[in-house]
Amino acid sequence: MPIARIPRGLPRFDAAAMAEIAARLTPRDYDILAHLHEHRVLTTHQIQRIFFGIPQSTRRRMGILHKLHTVTRFRPWTPYGGSAPNHWILGRAGAELLAIREGVTVKEFGYHPDLAMSISVSTKTGHQVGVNDFFADLHYHARHAGAETSAEVLAWWSEKRCAKLWGDLARPDAYGRWAENGRVIDFFLEHDTGTESLNKVAAKLPDYAELADATQITTPVLLWLPSRARETNLRRLLANVEVLVATAIHTSLGDGPAGPVWLPVNHDGPRLRLAELADAWPDLAHPATRQDEIDA
Image (cartoon, rainbow, N blue to C red; front, side, top):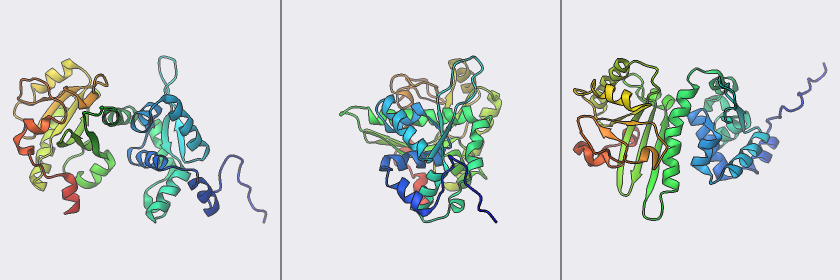
């Protein structure tokens, strides 16, 4: 029986090929691949804000990773003409290398190329990109805050990881831990695009109160909203909420979500920096963290 030939352009993922690709990857490349696996999709601009300095070096390196089949890409359809930026997804070779580093098979690693590519046609793509914008902006601020500011994204967990840990009680869009100038705050993110009713958004919050009761860990919920009017109207529904909540409007201006844009519920102002929320809520003075919960 004749041996089937591999079509041109499809790589052979054998040990020799993996070793050759691995020899060309840097620690930063592995970090990019790990982020793509955790967060499903990142745009070129987001990758630049997290990992690089200028667009040219970002595009050049991502092009190399694409040629090595460690990443793949797509461009969403745009209804008003023009072209969307490249959206990057973990490729088969990238998944193979990440699995090898963890000493597991690709299946055990949780990667399937069809499932990875499904984000390209998902109705949730825009929402996922919005969540990732939030954290990309935090990374950017941490990397460019200047010598007088110490800032760092200490944790960024995806919706999938959150659902695996707490999905029977609450399903945040992401969990994060942010540090700035000695202040540290854990938070759950709810990224609102304006497509749900305000009552439905507010109805999610009792789930977080149940999670806090079950784990005995107080973690505030950040509502990241698309407009001032929506924020104003939502806050009217949150007066008696039993969980710590702060609201802000989508922005990448100034210091972005790290900056003085947050207004805790039942506070009149002024708006606070993300890290300053730790001072606004006395219960968070010495918070237990979600990492403590996992390690316990």
